[in-house]
Length: 391
Image (cartoon, rainbow, N blue to C red; front, side, top):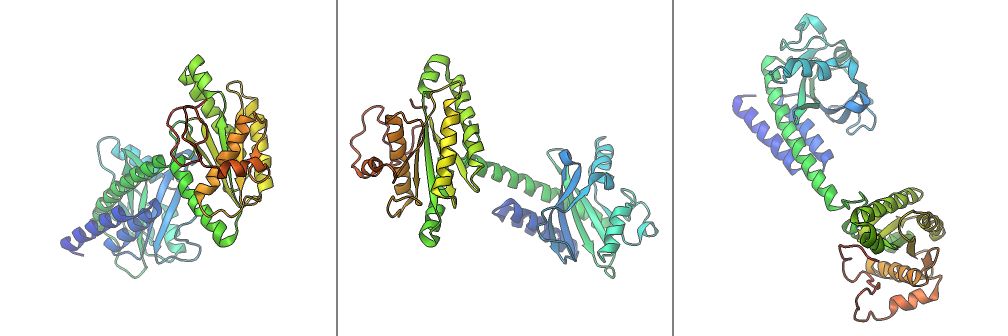
């Protein structure tokens, strides 16, 4: 591949990573773009998991052999078997040099000794892997992100193909820097997406995440008859805590209850736990029966009542597994759960109130919503929750 071809390959790789909608697609674009740019038959992208002391393969692209999956769940290698990714990178480039790619061959030292490119030494683990998988040579390029070794890009050729040379290693170094820039962009986008659906104080999902998940859940209910349950919780006494002890203490109460809710939600497979805003939280499930959800919500109320701060929680449940009539929209289920929560708060109930098991809830949910006076608790999801804390 000439200079123009290599420039074109770099541009195409960069564009493919930029256009990838998810991190996984970005990894695939990186591995495929690298193997195509270098004329390889196989490419892989791995990350160095420092806390676990291992290289974890994120994606295998191109001509895979037995046992290699495109997106492996557990293909990992102890980093001590590949010291160049940890020791070489730090020792050689910490002093002012730059990370450089190198070449290994299935023939071992006879074809280059210290590596065809004259860089890191012969690694018998990589050589053994080339032989075991029927490949002739590979070029390995370290990926550096934020000034630290992030992982590596690996491209291989079959036995009868021309060996990678020093020029290929130099080009692989350039490719790795482009891939690093693409990964950095992907990480920023993933963080933005995460923040868009996460409550910053508690780390739970936010209202936007609930709306999206609940729309999907109602679709499953209408198409498959899946049981969809929504638990809406109002943390009692938050305003009093804020007024008498300060908002920092109120925030601790919110965080403590969020932890209780998260632990409770873990008992229901696939549950989404969220803070809707202010002192309101919710738990959304698809699949568990209404009785299973009720048991978890009952325990949650009991544990919340034992918190040192606050005055427990008012909890309302609406589930398609109960006699609440047809639910045609997410708003309907939210309105029913809200009405049940309002009923629990007004009655100072020690446990959850369940729509369909308390006749007053259905009447309350179906009644016209009057003009809302100050401190009226009946929001019923017709408008977003206010940003501040409630009573």
